[in-house]
Length: 210
Image 1 (cartoon, one colour):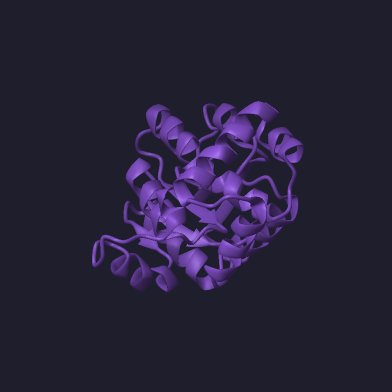
Image 2 (tube, rainbow, N blue to C red; image 1 turned 90 degrees about the vertical axis):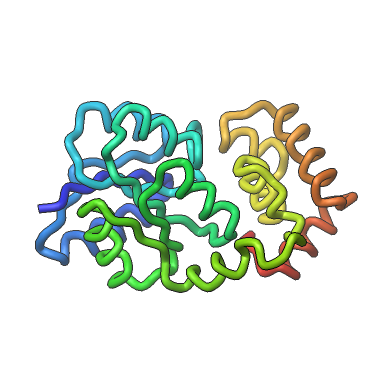
């Protein structure tokens, strides 16, 4: 029986994942968390075979959470299940210590396959992203502007283009409004974009989630 811990800040997502896992017969959910800090605290006392986590969560998330988990439980496989399908984020997650990466719109069969693969010590990448990762890996030196962003900057960028205010982003990520504004300034500098409307236009043109 494969024991799974789920970390995702969306309750409906956790419930959907639990139903898929319950239908398999050889897996069960042994714990869940609604943010990265809670996951970090609970994972210390819960024995599990796979941690399945979202990349974008309040308090602690993304690469920071992956690194912290691997520092504490080096052998625990981490399967990322995220809305982000940008090549730089996928690559960074795998380099940080994740064993697998799936997008949230993946087929349930791929999810089950990924869990089995990482639980047995293997690695797994969403089949829909394999070609994209190959072709983004150095065939050209010219990268889209958003790929120059750090994981945190990309997170805030996507929240901005989703229409969230500085205050809303600060509250959701447990940051100060000043820190969010600083990140926004750096995002615009790195992307050579002068205002929020152009950020939104860029996201639409590049079909980024928002």
